Image 1 (spheres, rainbow, N blue to C red):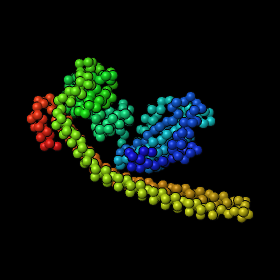
Image 2 (tube, rainbow, N blue to C red):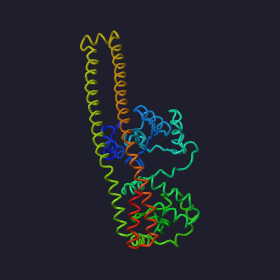
Image 3 (cartoon, rainbow, N blue to C red):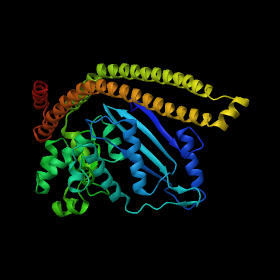
Image 4 (cartoon, rainbow, N blue to C red):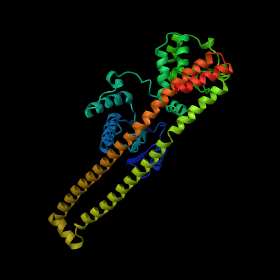
Length: 402
């Protein structure tokens, strides 16, 4: 329910819980699990449609239904939360694994393979192009990243996919330790001997990256290709080398570039805040209007059912059952109408958000190119004469390049 990193959050469904609050519902699951020995008492699943598709509420519910049937979690308590961010819409589904009747955990054998096959079926059913991983059942994409990797990169305001791509490209374009060292330095990273992780790389700010994790290569393959890291300088030695070879003047310039790139986003941040607030107000207005209309329609439907002796007569003659069927049919139609209105508003707002996101993407690409140029110049600075005049000349060249 983190509103800081998401434009909009919708609690789409809470099923099988006493509470109507997500936090309390998950606490219910935890409390019930205490009657068992199960430690992993919840199962979480992310539903990520392709970038160019705007999924509806029905799309997410259908996918969750098919997933729980595939996994054997039919009718287990579940929650569905929809996130909208950067012009994309995805959902998170959480099920309780605890069978409330038997008080035991439901086993989930081969769930990865089952969900892989379901993902492929969903893409084909919707007519979406299959990603390479589903076409070939290949391994993990090198641009997929863990929460730890995301947070490390995010602290530096650089997309972690950009960092992973740099490591992956350097690895693929080198056939030796020397080649990899040069390839990484071309991208602003410096190879070193880690304390526990074997081969690591440092950026100009001294941040440490495990080579195996960030390049997506198994540690055994790294060792096979590069041998032992013993011949490399340690992390502390590499940090000292960076500090001594990159002049204070150069370091100041790097800081200036980073600050300026942050300022470049200020107008976009303000536009984004205003857009998000306006969209939230529109959704709240629609929600309030639908709630009021639903209450009025429910009152009208209830008024059709007579009470007292007349109501008893209606039940005996079957008229009450006819009216009840009519009310149920109308209620379904009204619920479908309301959902279509919500889906239409979401689609229109997502179109607006995507137009804005294209401006964000352009600026990110511009900054990415600037960082590439900066990395090249840092590399040359570390390899060249470190005299004052040399650094001044380098900074003038870098200013013209950027």
